[in-house]
Length: 368
Image (cartoon, rainbow, N blue to C red; front, side):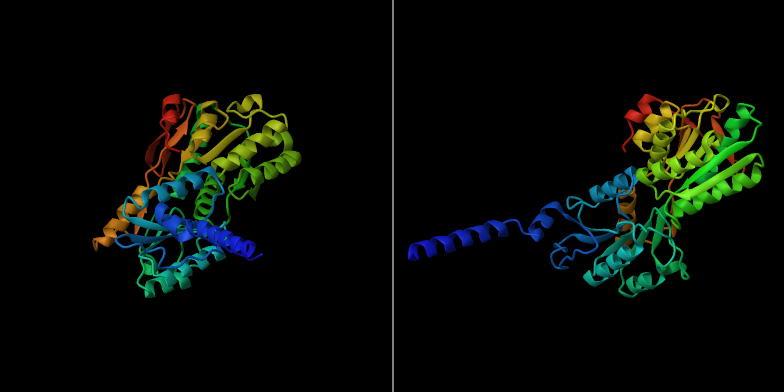
C-alpha cells in the first residue's frame, strides 16, 4: 500500500513538472509577443524583457482579410528580433474592449501604445489617462475625434474620403466613356458605423449623389465589413429591388465578396456591361483576392487601402525614442486598380489620379 501511495505521488510530481516546462510567460519570451482577448490578463513583469521596448497594440479584431494582413504586419515589424516586445489585445470590434485594453496597458506602464480604433468618438478620457501616465499613443488606420488635438501623439492612415471620391470619380468617368445617360440605381453596403473608413467612403458617395442627378440610391445598409453580413444584406436587397439594382458600392473587399455571391445566387451577372444587365461592383482595400476578381471584371474598380502599417509604425516609434516629433497627421499614399481600360485616370478636386491597369504580374507581386 505504501509503495502504491509513493508511486502516485511521484507520478503527480512528474506531471506537474511537465506542465511547468511550458508556462505562458516562457512561451511569450520565446515569441516576443502576446496575443490575447479582452478577458486575459498579463503580468507586467513578464512582458518587459530587459533591453526591449514594450509596445501595447490595441487591435480592432480580425473581421476581414485586410484586418488580418494589418495585424500580421504589425506583429512581424514589432518582433523580438527587432528589439520590441509586443503585447496584443483583440478588441473583437467592441470599443469597450479596446478601452479596457488601453487601461491595462497604462497599468502595465508600457513604453508606447498603438491604437487602431474601432470608432472615432469616445476616446478623450482614456487618452488623457495615457497622457498623464507619460505613455505616447500612436493612432493608426482609423482616426479618433478628441476635444484636445494633442490627446494622442500622432496618427497615420488612409484618406478615406479621398478613396471614396476616387471611386465615385471612376464611376463618373466610366459612364461618360460609355456615353451612359440613363438613370443609375445604386445600393450601398456600409462598413462598421462611425468608423473612419465608413464615414469617409459614405460621405464621398453622398457628394457624388448630389452631383449626379441621374444617380438614384435605392438603399444603404451596414454590413459590418464582413462577407457573411454582406451576403445577408445583399440577398435582402435583391429580393426587394431585383433587376433594378445596377451598381453595388461596397465599402470593403469582404463585403464585395458577399455581395457578388448573393448576386450570382440570384441569377444575375456581375460585370461592367450595364446595357446587358450586369451588376457593377465597386470595392475598397485591394487585397489579392479582390484584385483577382477585378481582373475578371467581377469587381469593376478597387481603390487601395494599404494595410502594411508595421514598418511605418516602427519608424514613428524610433522617431519618438530619439526625442523627435513626428507630424501630427501622416497620410499613406495609395493606388486604384481596374482591368477596364477606360478611364486611365480620374480627377478629384482638380488633381489627376492614375488608375492602374491590373495584370497578373501585379497580383502575383501583391504582398497581401
